[in-house]
Amino acid sequence: MIYVNKADPSTLSATDNLFQTHFWGKIKDLSGQTPVYFNVIFKSNEQSDEINFSLLVLLRKTNGIPYAYIPKSPPLSISKDKQSQILEELALALQKKLPKNIVFLRYDLLWSSFEQPENLRPELLELKMNYGTRTHNLRKAFRNFLPADSVVINLRLPPERLLMNMRQQTRNSIRRAYKKKLIF
Image (cartoon, rainbow, N blue to C red; front, top):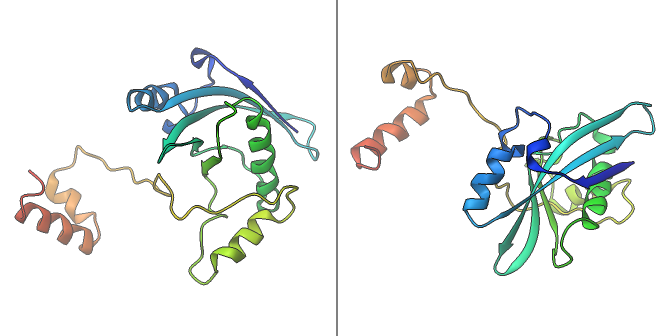
């Protein structure tokens, strides 16, 4: 069971996920998106304890179509066979709390289980994604807005050392960008 309540950004629980912070919401607000904050309580049928987390939802428009976007969340560690049901249940709970004109809800997930394998057709991935859901309304976007992975780089190292820690192709691309004066 999922319970969703609007939250004041100052009461959000701490997270190491930049894309789910009040700071990120303020940045997106400056770019014309509307941040909406929620407290979410997830009660699993298999476990007696509940999981609480904060959720930033960004209200956006693409080609005049209003939609809600959840960057890099939910932060739940759930078995792959239950992830689709959680997404569906969270979407249905949020639908009641979001403006009525919102056409769809988009997730950029922390989970890799919904990534498109090269050998799997998109319609088969959607069948897999909707297995066990009630509404069968989950769809795979053509691409993610945010990168799937991040790399932490120690910027205190000298530039030569930073380059040596990169793949050869990356080093060549950076050198080519300097030659073309794309990087100053």
